[in-house]
Length: 57
Image (cartoon, rainbow, N blue to C red; front, side, top):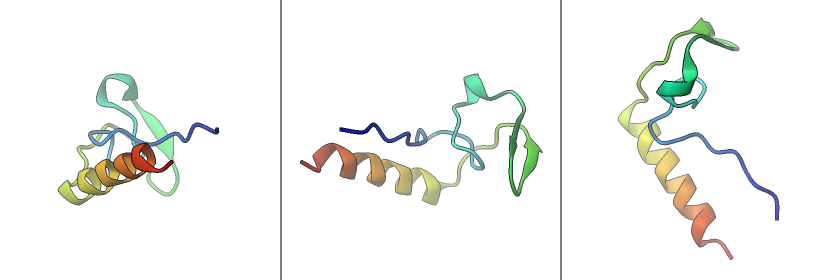
Protein backbone atom coordinates (compact mmCIF):
# COMPACT_ATOMS: atom_id res chain seq x y z
CA UNK A 1 0.00 0.00 0.00
CA UNK A 2 1.37 3.41 -1.01
CA UNK A 3 0.64 6.45 1.14
CA UNK A 4 -0.72 9.39 -0.83
CA UNK A 5 0.15 12.86 0.42
CA UNK A 6 -3.07 14.83 0.49
CA UNK A 7 -3.37 18.43 1.55
CA UNK A 8 -5.15 19.18 4.77
CA UNK A 9 -8.65 20.59 4.16
CA UNK A 10 -7.51 23.80 5.86
CA UNK A 11 -4.11 23.88 4.14
CA UNK A 12 -2.87 26.78 2.04
CA UNK A 13 -4.93 27.66 -1.00
CA UNK A 14 -1.87 27.40 -3.24
CA UNK A 15 0.19 24.50 -1.89
CA UNK A 16 -1.93 22.69 0.73
CA UNK A 17 0.53 23.07 3.63
CA UNK A 18 -0.93 23.75 7.08
CA UNK A 19 -0.68 27.31 8.39
CA UNK A 20 1.63 26.43 11.32
CA UNK A 21 4.18 24.76 9.04
CA UNK A 22 3.94 27.16 6.13
CA UNK A 23 6.00 30.36 6.60
CA UNK A 24 7.04 31.43 3.06
CA UNK A 25 6.91 28.84 0.27
CA UNK A 26 7.63 28.60 -3.43
CA UNK A 27 5.05 26.99 -5.68
CA UNK A 28 4.82 27.49 -9.44
CA UNK A 29 2.97 29.36 -10.91
CA UNK A 30 2.27 31.38 -7.73
CA UNK A 31 5.92 31.83 -6.73
CA UNK A 32 6.80 32.95 -3.20
CA UNK A 33 3.69 33.26 -1.11
CA UNK A 34 2.41 33.37 2.46
CA UNK A 35 -0.26 31.02 3.76
CA UNK A 36 -3.58 31.87 2.17
CA UNK A 37 -6.86 30.47 3.44
CA UNK A 38 -8.39 27.89 1.10
CA UNK A 39 -11.70 28.59 -0.60
CA UNK A 40 -14.82 26.80 0.60
CA UNK A 41 -14.78 24.75 -2.63
CA UNK A 42 -11.17 23.67 -1.98
CA UNK A 43 -12.04 22.61 1.57
CA UNK A 44 -15.02 20.58 0.35
CA UNK A 45 -13.00 18.93 -2.45
CA UNK A 46 -10.13 18.04 -0.10
CA UNK A 47 -12.50 16.57 2.48
CA UNK A 48 -14.25 14.46 -0.16
CA UNK A 49 -10.90 13.21 -1.52
CA UNK A 50 -9.72 12.20 1.97
CA UNK A 51 -13.01 10.40 2.62
CA UNK A 52 -12.80 8.56 -0.71
CA UNK A 53 -9.31 7.26 0.16
CA UNK A 54 -10.50 6.08 3.60
CA UNK A 55 -13.48 4.11 2.28
CA UNK A 56 -11.73 2.59 -0.76
CA UNK A 57 -10.82 -1.05 0.04
